[in-house]
Length: 128
Image (cartoon, rainbow, N blue to C red; front, side, top):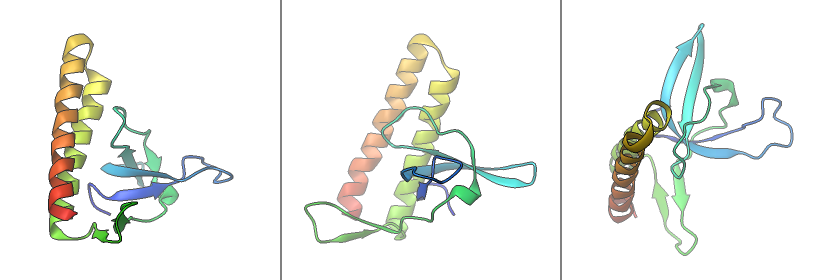
């Protein structure tokens, strides 16, 4: 499990009747000898609450766009670097959302969002 990995998780502790979320891993922490993960959706400002690693459903290794027959390998060297950059931008965005107030919050969220969009545009061009 690496920073930037796209991961499916169950949001419901019981695991019953809950849809899977597919978010990006932005941090890993050890709390009281348990591995906890922090994830965030690329299209939201706030990070998910810290959750235990046993709710992890795996790691997404490839994606396919709706109008394409081509698979994009998320384990390629280029994709790995781009995913890490997106994860750092997402961490900055989540930090700004949680810690900043007023105009500074809006500026920081907008700047980190523009960074994420730029990296995503480059990734579409480089990876496919």
